[in-house]
Image (cartoon, rainbow, N blue to C red; front, side, top):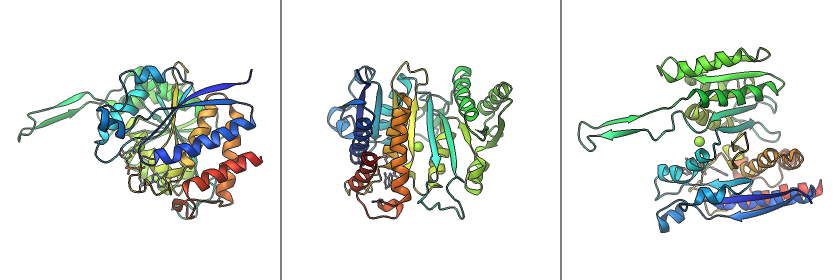
Length: 356
Ligand code: NAI
Ligand code: MG
């Protein structure tokens, strides 16, 4: 019997519903090449569902998802439903319940794309952002008191556990060790955040002792953002807390020409639970329905999903087609300076896979 994967598909809102079909088309083509069978089960959980049911997903949503090998997600969020409702009603519960504590976001300047930074060539920008994905600054602990009065007080608690800090650092150190540059950079802000970031720095220093083969450094998040623009070629593996990792992983892809090509893998490294793969971008209400969304971030996320599931060959097949389509500027969408539609670009990548 050949390999078979059961994938839960949540297209979500806006352009999520336009880019996911292109990801599925590419997956089917690559799976066919490698004798792998894939079954896709669709879930219409979204802000639209929220409007009719008052919930982003059903009460047993997590239980339903737990049976799949992986989750393939478009984007959630749409005007009319506050972003903290859509995020805390779907994405964050999935990340947390399935202990997807690694958010892995590769950043690469492709041949054929123009970086907005002067004189950057392919190879100059090639790094990973490893973002802590389940604790840190994104917590629901805190509250508001004397609401609506002049005495209003709001507090928002950050949570850093030793377990949570060490396991994300370990993942990042191991990734850095696997790379040629063997260079790990940690994002901090220990001059402003009195407790959490000095703690984070101390765990980095402790772990660095076990990795004498790596070059390890750290930067405050403010100068980090400046450096990423000034000298992106310096970086190799970047590790950051939930908030800092989130910021750096939008800034990184922006330096490669368009955030629309960037993928995001929410990984449970122990594989106890399904992991979730999505583009970095959101539902882009400003261009939804126009069929001009770039599907590359979603297609790259699909490739990362196959790598996580153990099919490096499928990953490589998909990525060499993506690289070729961009290099030869076949059917590129508007954000990459072309005129093609979402489907035309998805089809160009699919055709390249079928021709391999
Ligand atoms: P966004 O990523 O949706 O859009 C930012 C800008 O990039 C827009 O001008 C958009 O047109 C453009 N863009 C994004 N993806 C593109 C693509 N594939 N092709 C071409 N252009 C693209 O971020 P924004 O506007 O901050 O958020 C919109 C909604 O998406 C909000 O409701 C937000 O909460 C949600 N969101 C959801 C995420 C998720 O589901 N993981 C992640 C980020 C935002
Ligand atoms: Mg973000």
